[in-house]
Figure 1 (cartoon, helix red, strand yellow):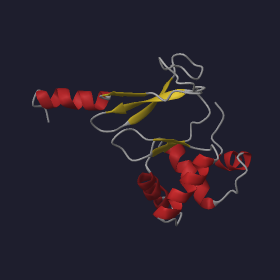
Figure 2 (figure 1 turned 45 degrees about the vertical axis):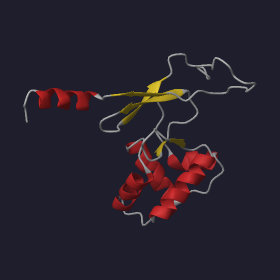
Figure 3 (figure 1 turned 180 degrees about the vertical axis):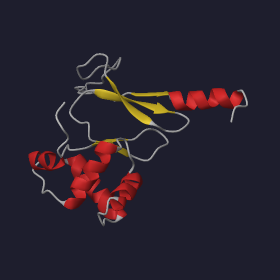
Figure 4 (figure 1 turned 120 degrees about the vertical axis):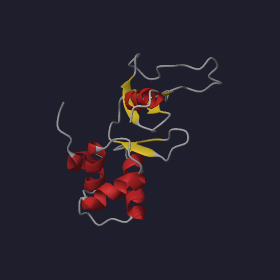
Length: 148
């Protein structure tokens, strides 16, 4: 796996390399599936002065140009990831909202086809698996036994 290179990704997408965009990509590479608010906190903690509105605008531009992928799990704020251009899906914990990538078992998009496509030319299927992550399952088990 080659190293993550924010400036190269920006140039490949035809975008100007800015400190804010690089900071957003670096933060997402370290903390995938983050919300704009979470990214704002990480970017400013890294010493890059950026307003929340500027973070939202950067995320929109990066998503529009295919540098980022935006996902919207039900009941959650939009989340962003740097993993783009492949056919992968997500697991979401129903207790803590943790999101992790899961490779598609089929590989090729679309990995599922609707029973009736109503004349659409289906290009991809977005699948979200819901469940309880190992940490929450362990916490639930220890809570049930009265272990603190």
